[in-house]
Amino acid sequence: MLKFLIISVLFSKMPGYLMQEDMNGKVFLFPEESNSSYVKLLPEKSGPYKALSVCLRYYSWLYRGFTLFSLATSDINNDFHLFYSPRHYFRVSVGNEDLIFKGINLETWRSLCASWDSSSGVVEIWIHGNPYPRKIFQKGHIISKDPSIIIGQEQLLHGNYFNITQSFVGEISDIHMWDTALTFKNISDVLQYNNLTGNVISWSSLNYKAEGHIAVLPCLKSMYPISTCN
Image (cartoon, rainbow, N blue to C red):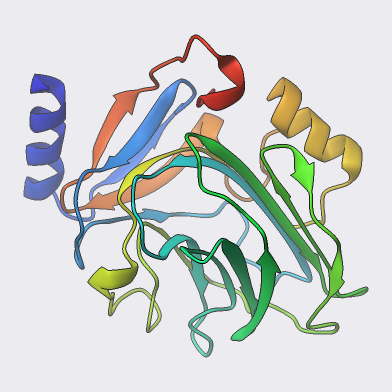
């Protein structure tokens, strides 16, 4: 508890302070609803992106919808956006257009991988190691360069204007992003073996700025590894 309080105070006193660290075995804790607490991720490659894949793990006790990953560009606020709905679906947004995947339950820790390829338009999502039916979406769209990538909030404008009712509360870990569409083997390497790191965002060497009440804590390992962070 003391560690949480110390880290929260530090982040509150140093808004926008750039951090770089190996986050393996750690989580971001978002302890409360907010329209001012978030983590900004700084990508290794600034784009533009003709394909994109994101993997992460999360645990939330919320019974409302919330944003897991928000990528905004100067012209499009939801250029790539991952959103969970309490009506048991995930919404993947590309270029401000929404694609729905239904029949998804929220239980304990969840792993999520989502990929999109402009050339084919193929969108894939994997929840807790289970693939959902692939869809074709936003074929030919290109995500602009110099994105603003934020965890914990949905960007209504590039880099700001957050809605507290869509904020994330809970824990997020193991965030990786690639500028390619992951293959089946790639997904297996990420979810089963944790030995593939992102070339745009890597949890093993994460560049980020934390704003507001955000804590970095050790991952609490479950006695049942299938339902835990790495």
